[in-house]
Image 1 (cartoon, rainbow, N blue to C red):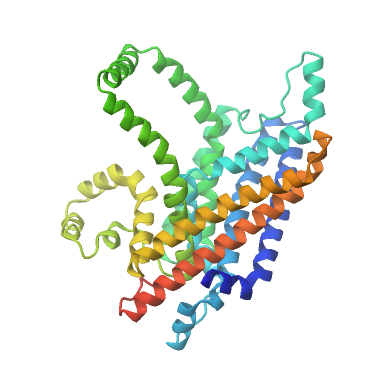
Image 2: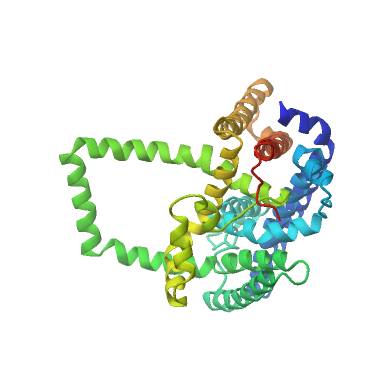
Length: 405
């Protein structure tokens, strides 16, 4: 009900933000498929990957804008204003959200969808060129914009992007200047995208080498025999393989987006101390902070992947639980219901419209996909805002203040 209330008050700006984001996204993807072909191929590929990086930054801006639009309708924001807190400008929130958004975006692999959309746009836009090349037995460059970059150029651009990423990260830590967080996120995405070609080449070489190693073959054989000898192990493995993807889609991913929402609304903590606050493990963090620098660096290196991917989610879960455990379950349930409901609605519309000519969906697909994505995104943003608002309000009534920026 609170989600519907927020939608009723903010649906128009939410729709405008989404529509503007889709228009910018289409323009950038189309431009990337145009600039990729012609003379100076390597320079053009660098420009293409740069445009892909801007596509992700456009998504960051749109998500932040949609959530920022909902701020004025939240009970928590009104309570802060009553206490004398000033409303935060959009660009301030954007600069704060950007670094954490980049980490979560990369940690959960959301960038693969952007790369896939660029690939599909390239194949569709240059379909006849690809067909003509295949007809004459020639090698086509269509669909290879992200993997044809020379590995030496990849390494050089990765070094530059890494240097910028490190520089802007230091500036963000100092808290000086504006848009350093946004620049750090751009450098983070650029570092990953520019290194895609080099990573693919190394991965192919390593996978071919690993597949023929005796230890790998022996381990796979032992694991297969163990599953045959212990049927329970095989059953448990099958259950985990079936349940784990569902857990990620229905619990972990909503928490990741809730983390972004909390950043926009000014209540968030990404460190291990906040996650363990009030537990017996907090003492261990105190001891770690008083230890030698080498010890702390080693700990950060060992737990780095865990911290980037799971600590923000655990913090979000912990803050939501303060508002009542059923709130978290209801958020996940509504998130899944919106996603699955939209898929069934899409199928129903396709069935009702029908088509005697299959190619008709070439022009029917875009408006249908736009309407589906618009509905899912707008409702999801309102759901995240409502979840945060209920949790923050209940925590405030109980005298438990959220971590505020």
